[in-house]
Image 1 (tube, rainbow, N blue to C red):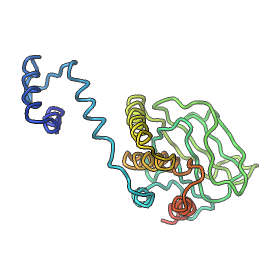
Image 2: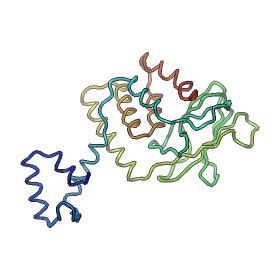
Image 3: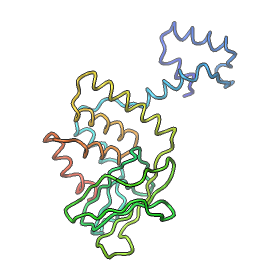
Length: 242
């Protein structure tokens, strides 16, 4: 569907007529000639952003079902450690958050993050009981690829796993940020609780195929409901047993 067709579809009959007159007045070829005009760019951009926002989720169970359907795992099934986020099977996952959640199953001694050339950005010792942590290193650069390295003991020189992830491009990140800001404002106006806001943000991220960011919303809720607690408890085993 072209931008012009989408524009006509979402307008009333009178608005469509006025829109056509405006397009003709501005000298825009219809519909296949394909000049565009800078005056109408904001209208088209607004339609694109609106179309990106999914319908509201009714529950955490709904979001969790969608998330489990995605191929999220990055580690092999036979290993002692299963990287969960940011990790995807057969692809390099993108992240929106510049302070992403690192999530895994199993016992680690430390994790490290480097740039694609191996230049260290952050390293963190972790206890055997720890299975998630928020990145605390230097800021990521948009569009750049980074390496997440997992070590099972503190003397280990070669990581058990090395996984790639990418900070998304600025244009895409700005669009998503605008969507989330509008979503947050709408929900706060309606008196939504922090957990309800996290639910809808997680739903948004799942529908954008940003699974690490969706998991980060789940894990960020303080004093989660019983339903969310149960989902968080079963997340590692559910995502690592496939």
